[in-house]
Length: 308
Image (tube, rainbow, N blue to C red; front, side):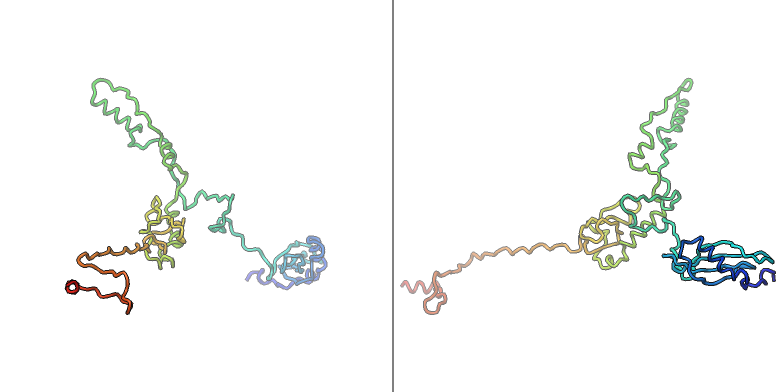
């Protein structure tokens, strides 16, 4: 066992009695009237003692003024070491500092806010390089021009001619910029998967809305397709009455606003009237005076007997 572990942790008597010296040191560091009662003594080592005083400063509940005093071996004069403000067991402390990049959440950005991306952001990867040199197999590349010149020298008589290179019809960078491909960085595979996971969780097949939907978005007329590889599994909802209007939705998502979920039925058409032209329907002008009912219609034989 080493000598350091056998030393006593009992506070040195002279250092422990130097309460007034410690208080004066604490009052010199602190503002007037914020050093409270003596709150204890702790032995820091051989002839090294720390005195604690209550802190009455507003906003520092549970903090203590700590004044460390010491004396040399076989010396009777106690000297001041340091005086600081330290938190106690019940002190109110600020939360652990977290970098802004880890605190940021979706929806935190407001108008005018700037969100810089890390140069090594895993969600992005380098896009078009911007080099003007055409591909080696291009008709305007130097390799193709040299190959044409060599073949011409083999099939023609006389010394080889200095054939001019094919004129350039536009740089690769200009064409890429016209097509919208000239970006410094594009989404990496990790960025694509991260976006797909977020969209699938918000508007995917496992949501309660999709579980109760009559059909999925893949067959909905309000689905606007998107380009790129994400278009194989996602689209944009264009139904103003849908809860996902203007949102990127999975093709397996669905809601009650599906275009073919409840097609309005056509109004029933009345049947074509049927007219029987083989018989005559009599319509008397007035009813019989006694019963109020229609008079009987005489048949042809009764009418002939009446006339005879």
